[in-house]
Length: 418
Image (cartoon, rainbow, N blue to C red; front, side):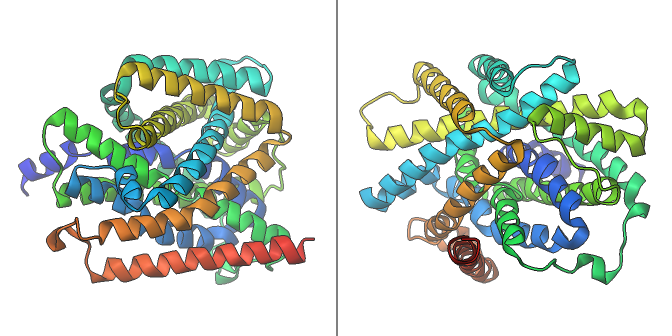
């Protein structure tokens, strides 16, 4: 075994693990767990479908950046002002909701882990102040070093927890059959796919982090390094998504427990039900670990969305020095305040807010997947650095499938639920 090659491969991990930190958050601890709790193993095929259909569009972000040294926002601008304008408006809108959703659940875990109670707005304010302070002083290097440890530890702990409850699951074929496709089920499937295993927006973050790492190291990652890096993070996030669905089924679906409607209550209920199986001793271990994972998600999402906003600004007004720390800090604060305002004005139910955000990112996803497909197979990418024929076909099938699901959702939403 070539230990040097293995060491070099794992040393190349960076943007892929940042992706895993983005993915393993709301989609897993909230949406995948809710899917198992409400529908049992019948949503397993939906989770697997989402992971398969999202793969090409998400993977192309890092590969495009590795091949060209540019992020995807630059490519979108090259498509013309109409495409770039629609992209910019949709992203500036959705990124605020994504930060708000991640912060809302993370603040709930923060309260549970540290043992204090406050309202959702104040809880999110405290969380975002902490996140902003860490990002302003740490940025990419500190982020990457800490997340490698957190993701590995959380993966191991989650695997152990899943193995402890696996004998409680009904493994019959009928248990995996989809439930009747009524309006509430269709709406939940769309909300689940929207964040599973992450929003397609993460492809843009992947390209931004790849460029940032290339600048810090003075060299671009090779096609093989970029692909390995992303695949490790993506496969990890997909496995954990299935594990959380199994945990939600084994612990919540079988017991018939209904989760509280507020963010802190949901976090507390999630931990209490899990520890009723694993053991009371594990409550604070689970609480601190889940908090670390969600805090890493909040950090990576907020950092990534700030970088995306700066990239949009750089392509819109190139005469400005958008790469300065001053602009980074200003945009970071503006996005945090906007997320806080969204929660203050729109939050009625924790679950409904998560579903609303999931649907927003779901609608944007197929369009981004199409743009990413065009970017990676454009003339600026040498043929030897483009994905092969199988991935090209996979990408086309994925795009068509996601657009068809969007049509189904619109039909049920407009004509059946009304």
